[in-house]
Amino acid sequence: MGPRHLIMIAMGGVIGSGLFLSSGYTIAQAGPLGAVLAYLVGAFVVYLVMSCLGELAIAYPVAGAFHIYAARSIGPATGFTTAWLYWLCWAVALGSEFTASGLLMQRWFPDVAVWVWCLVFAALVFGLNAFSARLFGEAEFWLSLVKVATIIALIIFGGAALVGFQPLATDGGTPQLLNNFVTSEGLFPQGFSGVLVTTLAVFYAFSGSELIGVAAGETKDPARSIPKALRATVFRLLIFFVGAITVIAATVPYENVGLDESPFVTVFGSLGVPYAADIMNFVIITALLSAGNSGLYSCARMLFSLADEGHAPKMFRKLTRRGVPLIALSISMLGGLASLLSSVMAAESVYLVLVSIAGFAVVGVWMSISASHFFHRRNFVRAGGDVAALVYKSPLYPVVPILAFTLCFISVVGLAFDPNQVAALYFGVPFVAACYLFFYLRHGRRSAASLNESVTIR
Image 1 (cartoon, rainbow, N blue to C red):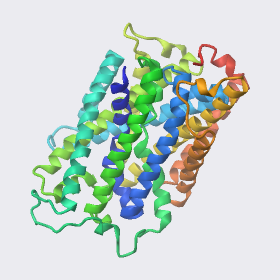
Image 2: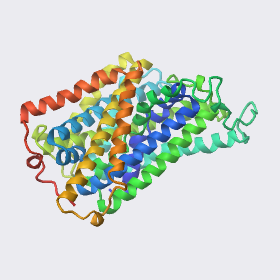
Image 3: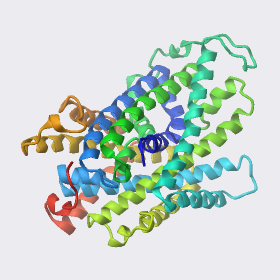
Image 4: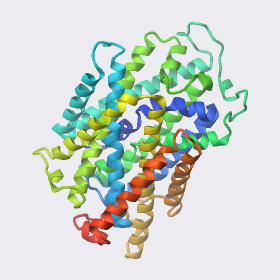
């Protein structure tokens, strides 16, 4: 795969329900200005983490590389925990993506059961991944393109309406500009704590940007492709996410958004766009399938990498003639299908808990990436390496990895202050502890070097 595929894989993994649905929760909790600030913080953290990731991905260009970074730089137990945390996050998320898509399809086919659409979409996504990495990358490019076009349309049409150009509006409303940002309760209607408790949901919305690191091992000329893809991804996420949130927050009163309807549907409806609900329904289904497509790719490569390092059954290392880890892919899909059982309790509160758990897992991985970069650079210099000779180096070391780690940690602490999301701590912290405990009981304190002999530092 080349830079074009890498950029769209990252974009496809990021642009999903976190933007199209969870953004309504963020605006409702943090207020219009608070939501924009939360997404700006999210974009800044993504930049910091991607800067760390760029140096690591070139140093270790292997498939499913997150746990390699941690195992070599921090310790094998941390690598083991990082890998399983990330795999579980995406495997469980697959079921919710398929279930949500099936529920949305009932708008057009109310007589077809949801589970039928789940199987259809699961088969489609599995087929795209099973054929070849090239087909996956090409499919993700076009699926992501639909989502990007929708966001651009929202920013253009919504921005035009805010300055008074509303040719499609049915009520001929007056320009709103940023009037919505000043609420009756002030700039921060829920206080600044409302911004804090939404940061994890925002980080979840940005999750998937780290998929560039997962795809590094199947990238053509990683020294050139990865830095280019990282820069383009961060810039586009900043424009698309912050731009979209600004338009939504300025167009729709914060009291009128939530998890019951996509804010994109609300905005297009207020602009008088014909068939807005059907258009957005199609786009959101595409977004969910695209995120599932990237998620299954990530799951399979992470499971393959775990097996390659001796932390999962060796059968997961088997590849097809096209280089696809088919057994790992199949097991990852079973994890997604098993999580479809959660659809019987598909309430808004359950969805929010799932988002929080996924956000906890992703932030944990981001913290691992940041810490891995900190120790990797330090070890590199201590070994006599020349930083100036690196193909790509993160700027302002050690400020960038330390700041990235700290901001991620603060977002996790913020969970304790939101009763709707605190369940993520009850699940996430014991899971991480269990991973560490299992590793030490089974492997002891085996050296990281013996677990990663096949990895060459570049």
